[in-house]
Amino acid sequence: MFSFFKKLAGKPAPTDPDTTLPQADETTRQAPADSSSRAGSGVEPAPAVAPELPTTVAEPSLEDTPKLSWAQRLKHGLSRTREQLGKQLAGLFSRGGKIDADLYDELETILLTADVGVDATQYLLDALQARVKKDRLTEAHELQTALHQALCTLLAPLEQALDVNTHKPYVIMMAGVNGAGKTTTIGKLAKYYQSQGKSVLLAAGDTFRAAAREQLMVWGERNNVAVIAQDGGDSAAVIFDAIAAAKARGIDIVLADTAGRLPTQLNLMEEIRKVKRVIQKADTSAPHEVLLVLDANTGQNAVTQVKAFDDALGVTGLVLTKLDGSAKGGVIAAIAKTRPHPIRFIGVGESLADLRPFVVTEFVDALFEAPAA
Image (cartoon, rainbow, N blue to C red; front, side, top):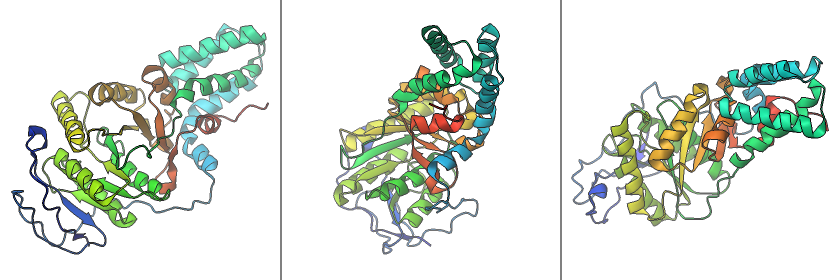
């Protein structure tokens, strides 16, 4: 059962239209109950004890010490993509024969069916043909090394670790469509940064989706992380107060959840733009990262989402989730050729240990065995 922190008090009401918003409640595992409301907030006092969580809220896994190495978990998590792409490529290169037009045609089909995308597929084919000409390759098996290197070269710009030490608090605004795994990713990121000795505060800014607030509160409870929340109301208000609380307490990182948006819902996309403007009112340098969470199962639709959210918010990084449930991991290559934003993290399972920074060689090696030197 959750108890409530004393609400933030004494902060003057903002006069800017974007920040004249209802105030948020805060919940955490260890706080004493207090039902007092902020002066002048116009918000009814919060109950001393939060209601029982709905039984539909999934509890996050706390598997912190997996038996398998990360390379093994990644390989296992990418098994469906590996089946679709890696094994077909291995079969193509190992069956012998000369490098000819038919081989290129078959390779093109394999790449396209793995959602590598037209532009990325053409890039890889051009790179292979250039390598064949340069090194005078003739046998099909000789293309394995060339393709491995070409794919690593294509994806290399996406491997950029997120540096959260440049600001305090470092505000990360999370965006994405409903169902992409955004709220779960926030919980996993909280645990990831805690393991690095960082203090974290969560802002339950998805105030529209059923049980989103409760789901984030579960993560806060289990990780012993404070959660700024509001039962309904305005997403921007919650995040504004979270940043203020983080500043007051010297918190290192604020992870701000936002309501899921379909790129075609122009009026709702405008609302998420407002959230970003309000964040900038709370901290002129924020948000320091706009992370877009993508579900790998959506394939080429993920590229469309990157374009839409980038145009609306100026996306600075990506998180690709659910790679373990998809045969469409090749979409990473498609992203590299359309909107090559850094992929900060990838997710290949349900446990906390299954969300890790994106490393190109690890990813490519997991798709098909690294060729012998």
